[in-house]
Length: 197
Image (tube, rainbow, N blue to C red; front, side, top):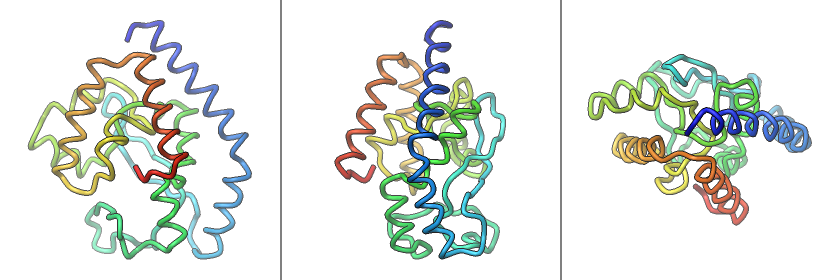
């Protein structure tokens, strides 16, 4: 993607994320109030991820798990049938509504709408032991959605992480504004039809 393409992509991210934060404010309020009734902790969950240039940032999500989902301090991958989720929280995660606060991450430049999903350093180390090409993903902003998100499904094993990496590297080689638009439209269509990606 050339300089103009990157500028247009960033401009698009800023405008759409800002409009999304405004337009979806009723949904934010509803989810906030529902979650507030079932937790004594903060409703917005922050977790360190690694972004462009290998720099850490705090990804934002609605809190869908118990106060201490990793009591032994070892990072865990959430599973589809995770017992730590309430029915409402499971619905949010299945339809990616817990990720709505990432509109703020996009607005401030931590993320883009389209790009490789950002990962935690703990899991990046495991991935790079198998495939050190992960480092190339540091060249671009991580994304809210990607081809891997659409076609690889919920990433809950190292094997799926490695498959996702191959798809992300392919995106890195062929990325364009047209490809980004296709990925975004496909994501919206699948979520709109209720597909659990």
